[in-house]
Each structure stands twice: as C-alpha cells, then as structure tokens.
Image (cartoon, rainbow, N blue to C red; front, side):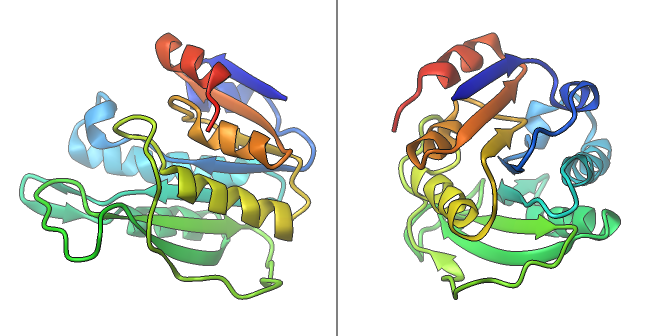
Length: 207
C-alpha cells in the first residue's frame, strides 16, 4: 500500500497521529528550498527534525538522510543539526552511516560528495547485528535532490530486519524513492509533499 498526500509536512503531522508500527525515513529540505533566511532555516531544520522524532511512538525509529552544503563560503554540517534535534527530543542515536554520493576523492564545490544517514529513537534499541559505517555507493538518484536508491533500500532493510515497522512515512517524500523502496520490501508507505507534480510521480514510482 502506498498513499501520497499533497500537504505541508508539519501541518499534516499535527493533524494526523502516527499509525501503528511506524517509522520515518526522510530528507529535510535545504535552505534554498525553504523561504527563510539562513539562520531561521537552521532553527527550522532542528525544530522540524525534533518534531518528526517526537511525532512517532517512543520505540519507533526516525532515519534522516542529509547532505552537507556550503553557504556563503561556510560548511553546513547537517549531521550536526540532526544530532541537535535528537538531543532536544531526548532521543538515542542508533547508528550513523556515511553514504558516498560520489567516489572517494571526487572534488566538489557545492554539495558534499557524501551524505549522513542517521537513525534515532527515543527508546534504546541495541543492534541485532553489526552494520557497515560507510555505504560506498548511494545508488541512482531519481531526481537531483533524491535519496540514492541504495541508501533508501539499506534504510528500509534495517527497519524490516531489526524493528516491528509495518509502515514507512516520508514527510518530505519528493518523487517517492523511499516509498518505492519500502514497498519493494513489503512495507506500506505514506508520503507527503507540497508539490503536486512530485506527488503525482511519487504515487507511481517503481525502482
């Protein structure tokens, strides 16, 4: 099952309680995607990630996939922003994987050649088995700001293997990579996005 809703994520979460056995896999928008000044966006990012964590039941898992950026010549570490949100929500960091978006050694001027994939929960969840700290290839990106297919599959596989998750929610679903990866593994999925065009694509995407 896949449901895609055209809505603003925070408003949708405020109006809809989390379903039974949920988890979140999502990427919060960059500063260029949100109509806020940079410092206001940083605060919005932390508060939004905290809201996502706290919206789920205490024993559920939120997985954030975020790529660092440069802003006016300065490095913006989104992994740090996620950690700030987890601390504010009194949540545990379960694991932190570095996902290579480009081969190691690639020179970049804008977005980093790697992404952070960070899993948090307000309940301790010791891992059932060891997992790699580095994913060497994020996989195909369905669109320019998409989560890599390999990363989406790895996140969904963790939920399938180590949690009781039945439904994956992506409050900023874009064109639906996370939703399609969840469906591949037999998990239901809910996506939310402000863009009607992206919602249409997310309803039908297959990997």
